[in-house]
Image 1 (cartoon, helix red, strand yellow):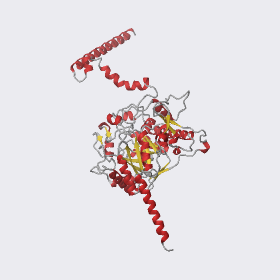
Image 2 (tube, rainbow, N blue to C red):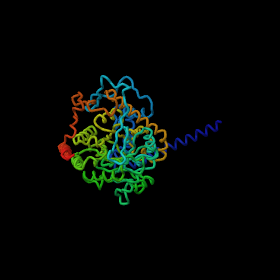
Image 3 (cartoon, rainbow, N blue to C red):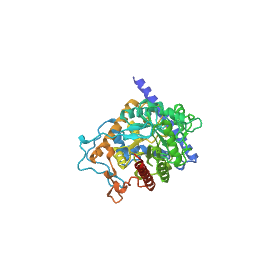
Image 4 (tube, one colour):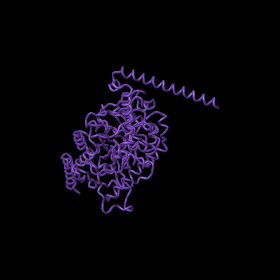
Length: 523
């Protein structure tokens, strides 16, 4: 027994000496490397120990999230918002105690105006249906106010797409494909699908990279594909096309998109065949004529002068040529990969662009014809309710549904190292994402968003969420007091724009002349 004990001690001693020796050699090696390199001043001036600076910098973002940041401090989504999504998706307790941790004083804070006589449970009604594309051969009708925004297969993984597809079916909402084309996994859940057409025309391009009518017809033949969305720009990167790093372009993704595998997928920063408002309107009508289904476009607003021209064209040609919907994206929208200058500084946030777009449509008498979809950091019921009150018909979210799948905001989307398997094609990391189980979380998240918006609507005294109006919201101003949103953004008079009034007057005159002619005819 003693012999074995001594032998064990000798082996452990030798191993300890070996480890210490290797550590010393490693330190010597790092010292020599640091003092001889010329790229990093910290390492050269403080060899070996200077390396810890880069280690701490890398790990700092993770430590801040879990140990140092307050519940309402993190960006782009704070812990309070994420925690609500996690609880909703898991169908666990969503009640809180003691009081709100939300500071109600910062300028821009949203406050809903409760009614002295809230809507009783027996008086509440289900969310009403909205029909998109009344002039189409196949209009689309849905009652879902909250839907899944564009995330392409490539930007997110196969199990993530499958979970979203099955979850959208259970929830009764639509799923936007993103600009990467239609994969079998989008169709797997048999949910309603919005096909997004990006600047590279993935999934609908011919051998020359141009839009193919034959491919459009083939896509429209899928009964699950309900609408088509032309992506003009994206909130996270206005003026920049989609970016899929080479490490994420697998053989399957390359085949779906029609590009070489292993090479970065970088879409043009604009549609080569859409260079004016007239081009956009013509493209919308071309796709609608070919597919027979509703067609709209997605854009983050900045300079809006082009919209004046665009709407004038519609008024001249007739409302039937108008887009069936417009998706307005916020400047603080998300992306799997985007340049920081565009992420941080370009485009209007939704709090400005949504009321601006809605008012422009009202002024031109087009609000009932063109449906408005709001997108951009709307992941909790209060923000969805704000968008509906401002004038949106629908709200879409991508990152909210990513949180429902288990996203922890690790900010690794572009590196193929997502620890939750959502934005990686590493099979080892994907194995933690069970599509069947996660699809339930998607459905629960959608359910409790709708329920939460309903709570706010009933508190404001209306019977269902689509009846929320700007008068139900106040915004905290710079001096600390709140201003009613219908005073901050007063609704214009329907058809009050000079061009619209001229069209309306002409229509009325034509109608009066027709009546006079009919009356003057002999009986």
